[in-house]
Length: 297
Image (cartoon, rainbow, N blue to C red; front, side):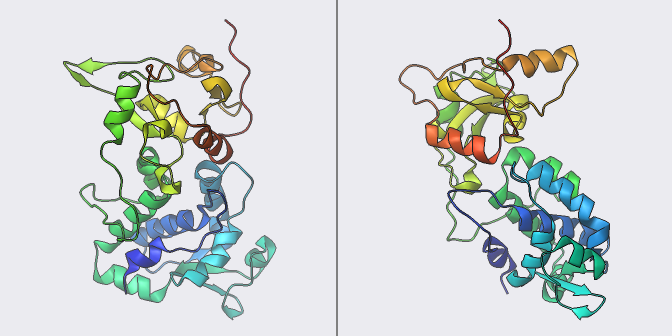
């Protein structure tokens, strides 16, 4: 059985690029626990808070519940649920999962495959990360679910999946003249830029094209905050800062809060700015809460 192919075809609710990473997050969490204890079960009442934190931190901005993937992942053939009454999930109700002692774990065939092939866990995890989250979040997401992955492991995506365009970085950095679009940072060592990255506005995993009008040149800090939903781009191509962000230090105020309402730095004349359709997707699916008012001055 091709487990990478099965993982790539997880059934997820989707409409107009809506993010629904419930199942991938549960699977990543289960892989982290399997790595720690291959014979362990995940009792819903014991892991509910962990799963809710993952959904709050890495899921869509709107309200959601870990009961949904705990039940529905069974239908993808990679997960099983048992209760005090026997095999089978009691449904998506939180109370039902708690009161029946529902426990979940990776499907027996998948657990056997992971034991036979120690490298499979890394390939499955990398596939989930690549297909559902931007690269800037992969490292901290692995830490959040307790996964330790070999950094040399690479994932070959199924042939049906599109491949990234390696020219994206150069297109975006050139369009913004090697300056962070939020703060103007333009550091180099000799002729080589350092700490500058090409950020997808609409994530590649959700149909975002490898084109300059879907990209921003951002410093490493602001790229991470953009992908976490702290920063966004609003009307008039001005920087948005989420009201959910809290920072009291002078550095937090200067490098984040003071950005609210500032116009983007770039792109250069002749280069396409971020397309409205991609800005709207990011505001709907990634940006958290309401924006702060523009900083004084």
